Length: 112
Image (cartoon, rainbow, N blue to C red; front, side):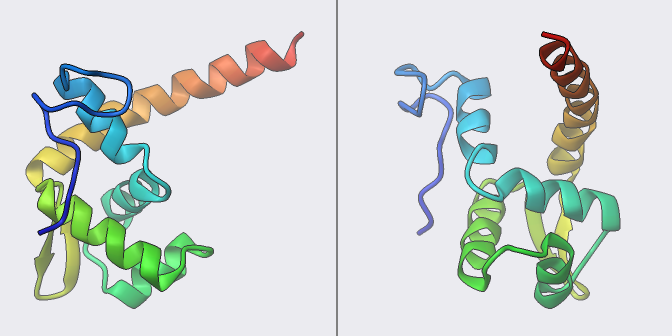
């Protein structure tokens, strides 16, 4: 069984395992958010297509992240490869504005 951060259990940054902290622990793993973001942007993709889109990701890391994202029910396997689930799309929809805010933050830091 794939070990993933779970709400209600200690995770990085939270002894109580607050759901948002468990989610941040999961998507904060190397390439996890990139895989979720890419699948959300391009739609269903085979392993090889996803590896090409993520460019520098190793096959081992991609395989591990896909297993974790599937265990977390954010991604599932379909006939055409891997696809984001409904809850995965919901999370992505909240990451997009956060990405815009991060760009604003970066501009503020560069003004120093």
